[in-house]
Image (tube, rainbow, N blue to C red; front, side, top):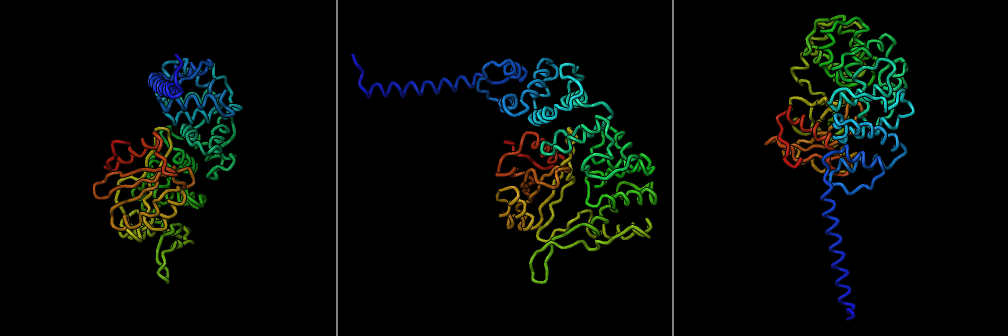
Length: 430
């Protein structure tokens, strides 16, 4: 008996619904227990199912697309053959770093197939891998962190150049001009030092500074950040060592902060018309010539008693007190959390990040919100994540990247570590 057109249409609709439900069941069945199996399957050109895991989807995408997908696939396949190194595939930031390694395959000095992994920790394994692939000559441990700055290809070239015998004093566009003697000490910096701290280690060691002095120096902001006019800051390090070699970390910090505030810090303030504008530093021509430690310490300490160690005194709303605005990741990368204290700073953050934080002026003025900008120390001051904190209960309300995108898993780990250091509460959905 022939079926009516209406009946046929209903049957087709039911079939479409059934096919859709089956596809959902199929995608649920492909939950990922081992990224090794995902990598092996894709490397052998087997059909890839729809994975429930974001990491698995990203792994397949990197192995499938891009001009360096073959080299990336070779690296991942080698990792997949060794069960004990699967930790290298477990974090998205690590996959990005491995993709950066694949892009530089032209500089490999050894075959990936000859790599014999040591250890199980993902960072140690990654360090071991890049040293196997690139290193002919000694490279400071801190330079491994440069592979995790995905947007800074130039930084990765510094690692490769040093690894293949180029003196650090001759690196292209290195952030700090250093002599051969400073470069010699830079590459011998202790493994625990960050990239910036290793640069300071090289500078201070070349002057003959002692280890206790250097350990105190890198506890100051000089050990955390690279400043404008680095030649001047090298003079500061020399002055401090020659005049106060036994200075405590706190004494050095106060003096460094004072010098920055006098010579470089631009603050927000009202002009004659009542408009809030950016003001120039109080003494842009500040010099160390003719000064003694005692005289400098006296004025720096008086300044410290008034303003503390906050570089930019808030002009429009209160500063939300936190214990630590700096986090060093396990990768060696360093991140700073700067509070935005004026309407102009909120506007600039909103414009650069393409979200609505510029409208939070009243919330900040009324102490209903404190806004922080998370930045990579080496990323030229560009904001990575904007964070809102409720000052009353110390809760993190939200954290947003550009265009209101959620932070990556790696960035959330950094934010949670910053929150832990400052007794802030992180919502359960992060």
